[in-house]
Length: 366
Image (cartoon, rainbow, N blue to C red; front, side):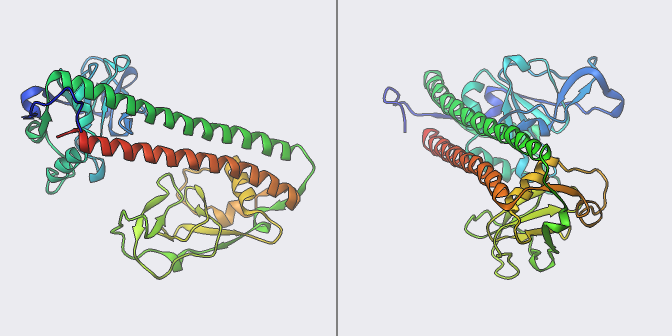
């Protein structure tokens, strides 16, 4: 696919011919400074943009600053799937440092090239160039990467068009995040109202049964990406670790809560699955208890722990909670579930937009 006004052949160039690679510096604990400059690391690159979480700051007398339109690249990581992930530096982020295991690609053509860095072709080249023993790519490898290279005029038109697609994807991300925030706010208000009324006090163990996950543990952790297979779950942020073709030991008893006994992370699950960790507790509702209501109650409590020990039987089960009648439980659960459904719909739109972007990338870069 091309814009009709362009017909000339594209060239093929190496990244090293049209730009330069600058490697990040290694910082020691002595370089950490509370009032220093932010140093960008792998964790700061999420969804091809910068995320400012778990930030680290370093002294200002020794650092490499990023510039507007630099492409920040993760060149080393414990997970090979994260090697090559990248983000474009905007003007407001100029001057920030970047650390070891990160490099920047600097070129006057980056507005166009940043979109090539999102293609499957780029990801395949990265995978082929990974180190034999360490998950990394080096500057000399990056310089040799070959890219399709049209005229500057066609570059500008492609970049403008694909940037509009990116803006729509970012808008969709904001819609999802705002819905998540709305749910948290409304959940807080609902459960605060419950706490302000006189309801029956019960212990968590009076509302939930638990089952050990031994029968449902996956045996082969070489997961597939085929979503038609059985998902392997964790209760933490990752949730779906991958998919397995194992046809035995599948949990298929309906709705449940999976609870990480160490971190106290929880997930509500209503589909067949297997798990990886024996530290998972599988929780189901006792009679006259709405499981979704209990899940949202536990989420409202914002349970967490940094202690490496099991918590459920010793700490969670004895906890007292207010339990309204079943009709009220169902009202609250259904209301919050309706927001979940809306979030799920917006996620599906987001997925379609990403697929559209990949289709365009595959057909616009020739």
